[in-house]
Length: 277
Image (cartoon, rainbow, N blue to C red):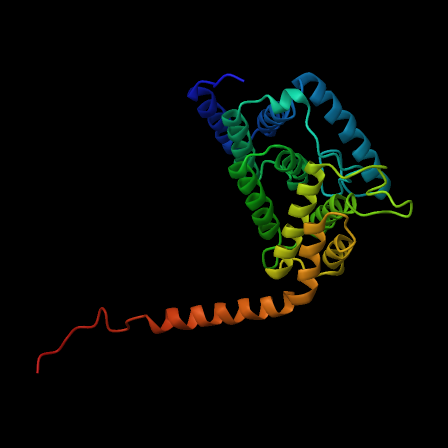
């Protein structure tokens, strides 16, 4: 695609910043939906109609449980894992794509978007788009977002459960089932799914090592990865079970040494008055 004018990227960032600072949720929803449509190569009308149907079905499930309404994504369920993008999304200029991703991250950091709404989209972009800088940006955002959700005294188990379920499905799509087919697809695992599974186990292992996720569900994600047909996915999971406790102990010792060294470097007399003899 042709190189867009620089004003377009500035306009995208400006729209995201203004809508994030506004108290009007409709404005932020409209801007986020437009950005998602650009990244997915969809028309805005079709995407909003699809989202309204999805929200209605999610609301029906939430009403049966007697908990959340239509706008809650806490109990959102990922029914399938599809690591692909349409041709129209692949033809999007890299500068525009990066601006849209940065704008969505800004809106998420401002609390205008639920975390689960962006998880699958960002994973698909990270798996399909061969842009190293964009992949690093998306990966760091997802890890930091999960860490912020689980700050001390601020754990959100519903979101954790759904994020872990999604990662488990991504990794499970590379595991042979009873019919001896990877992920039950009846063929080889494509490159995008392999990359997504590798990032899923990297992410899970990092969050465990940082003591953000240390529950049974986290271990189950990595245990399923041991049986993956993708060699580097299985290797990451095996190394995790062989040496994660030692790495965590080394991290803790290093952190204690850094804190001790920083205390020793403090000059307690830097502001003291010198007396004459």
